[in-house]
Amino acid sequence: MEFELEAGSKNKITRKVAEEMTADNFGSGGVEVLATPVMVGFMENAALGAVDSHLPEGYATVGYHLDIKHLSPTPVGMEVEVAAELVEVDDRQLTFEVKAKDESDIIGEGRHIRMVIEKEKFMEQAGQKT
Image 1 (cartoon, rainbow, N blue to C red):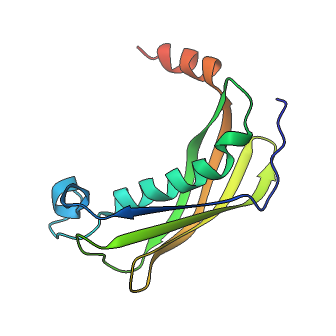
Image 2 (cartoon, rainbow, N blue to C red):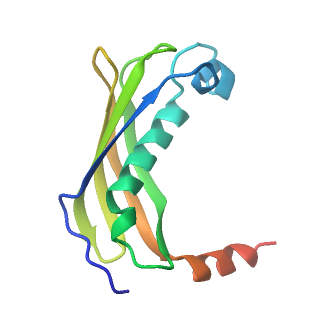
């Protein structure tokens, strides 16, 4: 693999919580607040954005490990800002610190590991399962 990734790369995204993002609608709880799986998806998206443009053609990153705490509920209509920072590069393994906050406080934080993959080989492997 020929690419240069170094710790320190950062990305932030902002999303407004919509009705379809709630735990009630997502099937992860019976309350109308931001669903944990949706928050985790935001964290993955922020991490992806920190490194995606640094990868050569034919490569991508995929989620590998999550160690996340969902600390506080966020109601529909409130904005959420999610930050990801690449803190460690170990060959193909990329470790990020991630943090989500709404307009009031920190709602989630933790670590997320992504693996750099070669898209063609990865999809061949997936195709062998069908």
